[in-house]
Length: 196
Image 1 (tube, rainbow, N blue to C red):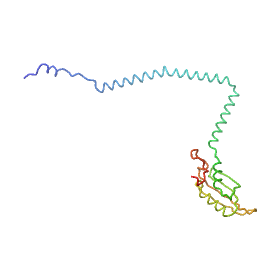
Image 2 (cartoon, rainbow, N blue to C red):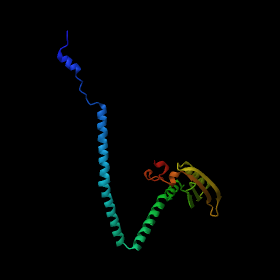
Image 3 (cartoon, rainbow, N blue to C red):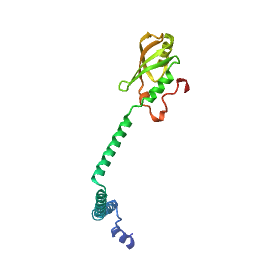
Image 4 (cartoon, one colour):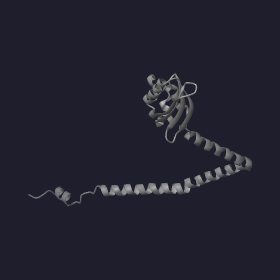
């Protein structure tokens, strides 16, 4: 049995080609090339001259403003700004002693008062000289300092009785860095130990 003519025609005819992934990739590449080229020439011939004109306009405004202000005034303004910048830098790195004073006030025994205060931020040390009514008051002051979380070490020395009958002593405290450089969010470092 012979094949019908219609089937023979279908078999001998070439199949129609459908676009595959290579033609899609080529089309995508050409589209990217066109967009890149258009963007490049747009930036070079459109945006760059616009930016150049803006810079020239701003430079002209600066020259006009500087011509209005005398050179002496400009020098004074620059000097004043430099002083403000230096002052700002100093204040940011400045050590505040007020938390240390508040700490000592809260940790002081009622029968003890301090006559000398010296603070060294480099070694986190506070040196105090004090006067107490009795040796027991000094002992309680030692305990009060040692129980504070801000104190790493407390050293008492030169304990002696003075001419007025009051006991004199020296104390050196090594404090934690948080007392000398309190963070603003932490609040005052001087809260009494039982207040938390």
